[in-house]
Length: 595
Ligand SMILES: Cc1cc2nc3c(=O)[nH]c(=O)nc-3n(C[C@H](O)[C@H](O)[C@H](O)COP(=O)(O)OP(=O)(O)OC[C@H]3O[C@@H](n4cnc5c(N)ncnc54)[C@H](O)[C@@H]3O)c2cc1C
Figure 1: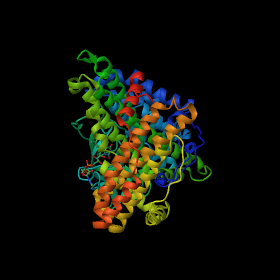
Figure 2 (figure 1 turned 90 degrees about the vertical axis):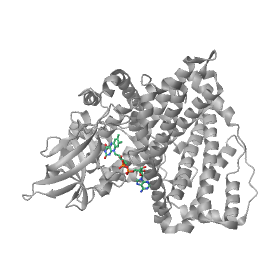
Figure 3 (figure 1 turned 180 degrees about the horizontal axis):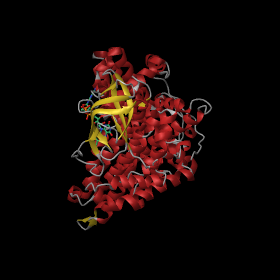
Figure 4 (figure 1 turned 180 degrees about the vertical axis):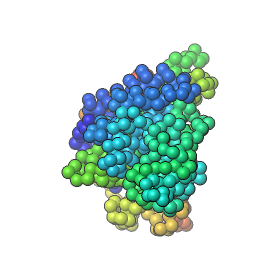
């Protein structure tokens, strides 16, 4: 089912340079009825079919998880990424994002579903031959067969291309013979189809479609994990495993293209799942705070508890704004493509275009969910530490979000690496913007034109944050040049600035859109959330930029640069406590995430 939007597609990473028009930024308020229906179906499925079985799933009742996945497939919840001609529902990017959010109340289920319908199925959608698509996709779209994605190995996680799994062609030329081991494979214990990466002749990193019944294929025992007890995570062993020659996926030596493009999708979907999880946990904490009494009051009346609920909602608001803005960008770019041409190639281009936004979604999503869950445990007090209460499980389950789909360290490095590649390749005019900023600095402070309006100060903060990035990145580039990648702490600080800018800007534009369409009073809650994000974001940026500058320049030059930084980030003081109280009121009157 395809739905349409009327967004303008900005270039990936261009949020650092441009001020998008509000109409070019998609927000959740613009979800269509069709899109909402897809989310509602997913949510109802989890509530009715999955939640009642959580205790059994956590105990790993044999066959239950695959049974539930297949049932969700019958409802069309597994085939969103598969085109209709191969039996899927061919969802647009916004619908599939909403589905990922709404399916996520129980992490073990959403991770299993994501491994199947995302990283397990999409390699065949994007890179399969016609015969491979016809053979596998109809069964994967309905859940008749379940899939998994086998990249990691005991000694090759972040460094995935350090794979020791080998593939050689059999003497009769009919089969690939695989030897080696994969590790940490989600759905590994029960999947039917495995997307496996191995090096042809020990050198050429390649990808294969492997079926459970192939000779020499053996799944290992379930891993004993800290969380996600309901999901299957197992090693897979290949001992002279015979894989038909035609099951090579894509080209020999091009496995990294499959692996990394698919991870871009996985990262973004993970961000959307974290959003769903964070809303669920926030709602549960808000209700608990209302019911629990201490010192003769509901704990929800205490300022320190209200501040927690507010800050949780503020960060969830930031994440939601980022996720739907990015989904809108991707969808618009998808629609801008020429369907008469190579649609799959176009999809790959779009995914690559927004790889920076996808890494931000993954890093920020997993960190917001970790923060929200940690604060929820605190609100539950001792009961939060007890397995009878759902936040204890959520706390354990979320820890891995910062580790898989590329650790948050690797994704932070990637954000800057991809930006620099775009800047040096001329796709993104960062260098020109940096040069222009230097001219502005040399010209000295100018008399700012007096402008007014309710958002002037907020927009000024975002504009100053962008200049702060150019200043810090420019100084770091000038000092370290092509060796900047070796300065990981500086790269990490720059990535944090980029991330904060995207969050601040997305939250602000969304609040402006709500105010424009529904009036300032109706937008009071989102405006308070957006402003809180702006001020905390500017604080974070100031710390990160100071660290990066101090590592790149010294002496008088450093003092001058820090003075310039202060000027860029100068802001009217905000009453953060009052902003949080406003958001807390909204959370408590909705008894859940309110926006
Ligand atoms: C529950 C679970 C499910 C999973 N599901 C799957 C799956 O379905 N399929 C699959 O293929 N894999 C899966 N994984 C594996 C996961 O993707 C890896 O664990 C992850 O990529 C990290 O690899 P690693 O564990 O080897 O850690 P390492 O790569 O050894 O990293 C250890 C630490 O070093 C840091 N580090 C590594 N390299 C650098 C660097 N260059 N610079 C700075 N810091 C660095 C990392 O950020 C991390 O903090 C799963 C893992 C878990 C726990």
